[in-house]
Amino acid sequence: MREKLKLLKTTALALSVIACASMAKADVLFWSTQAKPVEETQAMRDQVLAGAGQEVDYQASDGGPWLTRLQAELTAGDGTIGVLGGLHGNFTSLPDDLVDLSALGLKPTFSDLGMLGTSEQKYIPWMQATYVMAANKKALEYLPDGADVNALTYDQLIEWSKNMAEATGSPKFGFPAGPKGLKHRFFQGYLYPSYTDSVVRKFASPEAEVAWEKFKELWSYTNPGSTNFSFMQEQLLNEDVWVAFDHTARLADAFNQRPDDFIAFPAPAGPTGRGFMPVIAGVAVPKTAPDMDAAKELVAYMLKPETQIATLRATSFFPVVDVELPDDMPAAVKIAGDAIAKMSASPDANPGLLPAGLGDQGGKFNQVFTDTFERIVLAGQPVKDVLADQKTILAKIMNDTGAPCWAPDAPSEGACPVE
Image (cartoon, rainbow, N blue to C red; front, side):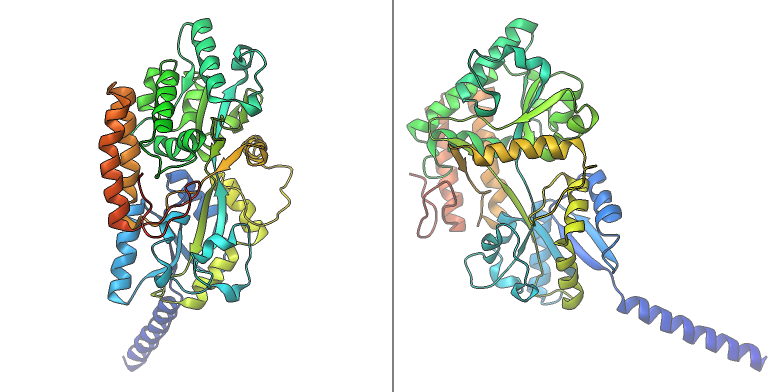
């Protein structure tokens, strides 16, 4: 009996030691607004983070819950989040809550953005993407005379869409206007910069009125099912549409499944340039991270060339460090990468950042553009009247948040004015 008791005590002690060791080796919680689709989240876990050398619990969330949980931990002064993943705009209201990562010595592309106006490296750029146009090669024969698909104007896109509709008997242009579509980013980063060289200041300007009238014209040749479309790769593959706009990650399946059938090309240009929105995601460490060393090790791991390539495979977001891409990269990488390079190098390129400094008002800001689209384009309300109404809402958001202007708007002292 004594021997059995001794054995039980020894076993209990061993289990206790194992449990303590397990608690000491806690997962690093990677709390991110990126790679939210289930397949991308799983790819992050299986393909990207499996080689991190430590246990990583990757959890993806929408921006609102992401910020709410973070703020709760910061308020409590005690947290479980080790590493934050987010877009530039997710971090702009948090510089005082993030640790300085300068000592890591990481200087990828766009590093200055990660300083958030301070002298410290508050986040490290992690990956980049943007939105491009895509077309089935069947559509190319209907391009307007003299049009260069890599240097289109909005007028030419409208004419092209009209040509396709008339030749085929149905609208072949597609737009992600569904509930989960990224339509607001098109208006913020493409249409407005191309017609107003602004997003906020000239929201209700005469130039903005022209932009919306042009989009109404384009909509008349747009597949009416677009109000249900969210990921345009699906409609390209089933050929409900032949030409579409979307995020590179939301076009990847079409390019990968039928690389010989599709092309990608730059967004169109308007009177004030070829507006486009580079999307910069970064990684940061909150001041309440439970294990600073483990968190910083994970940040460094995310910037390794091999990790950057794995991230590209998993998410279709491009590296922010200089890497030599393998020959076996997916077709989507090659197709979209070429279009991104051409768009960025266009002589009339007019890049603008994602909205920044809005904190938990980001959703309301996006809703202004969505509501404007629905009232003007779907409901047919007068452009000038709608812009006047929405301008008031937009001005309140800017004043409540105090968010200064971001490119392409001219810098401001304090809240960006809606002129």
